[in-house]
Image (cartoon, rainbow, N blue to C red):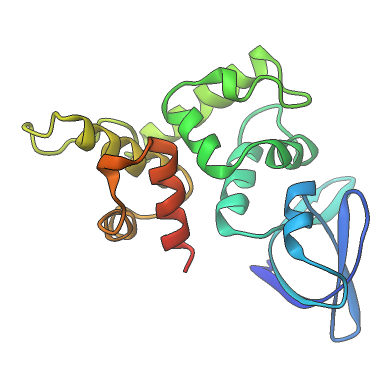
Length: 199
């Protein structure tokens, strides 16, 4: 319903911000990390939003980047994960680390986040991996059979992780052309590509 809201930041609490747009104050729930990045009250800010509707709850959730929004929506699609759990996860793990954990089956990155135990972490990875398979996204996407060196594997994993966050292969390939894949760790490749994709 709302793609984003842009207006004056009127105030912050522990769990939400209020943004004034033309005299209307929008109460938007955000992760603590996102609220820190927003800046100070009185500034004009832009927040990407998710309109959350349940029988007993209609709320707006806000995000500083599209990647955070995509991660939140992916988490909501996992059975047993609600908006509060998803927003808590965003305070603890970056979208790039989250995408990497999904494609590499790294449950340990998710365990330890408040409210996320072994079973929940395993369910998140399993369900999202299944979704990615159904969307023809995943590690080891077919390419040139001679592409067996470490840089190609790293590039393939970076592509998969960025697709988790909703980018197309064309957008990703354009960004990765400007990243020094050989010299960087996989997570830093993903972070640099995200910076380029966010421009």
